[in-house]
Amino acid sequence: MTTYILVRHKVRDYSVWKRGYDAHLPKRLEAGLTEKYLFRGANETNEVIILFEAKDLDRAKAFSESLDLRQAMEKAGVIDKPDIYFLHDQASAFAKASGY
Image (cartoon, rainbow, N blue to C red):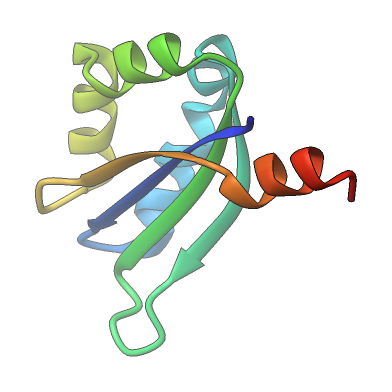
């Protein structure tokens, strides 16, 4: 079963946020996170939604609660409290169980 993290938040300025986000890549890799999709809102271009694949749920949760991440998000211009969801891919589980 694959584990994912979905993160949604608003940023002050997307281009400034993106530079900070890119600079934080080594920390995400340390936490076992791989970016799968990065979205911007169609109507609200400073709303960001990111889907990560997580190698380890406990490491992902610890990263999401870390002071380092909070500081990096604040420095990059995140302006609201992020929504963070920890998810399991049920389609993959179904496919494996069904032999697909």
